[in-house]
Image (tube, rainbow, N blue to C red; front, top):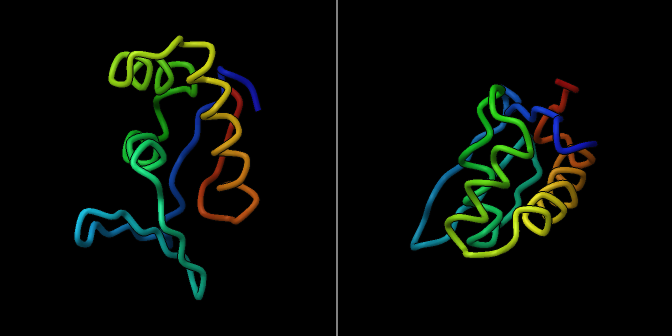
Length: 90
């Protein structure tokens, strides 16, 4: 996975916000997302690259873009392994 990778949501994955927390579910799996992970997840649209999402994250949380991109790659690797997102190279 690289900064140019474009993540997309799987059609059978759902997310819900409940009492200030964000949860995603696919089949019998459910995950609670941190505030930052939820920020990233909500921006996955099949068009934005990891770098583009990283730039938004960096602006929102006042962190270096490279750090944001690195953190997003780690998060999306976990989500792809869990089968809740797809990734494609740009």
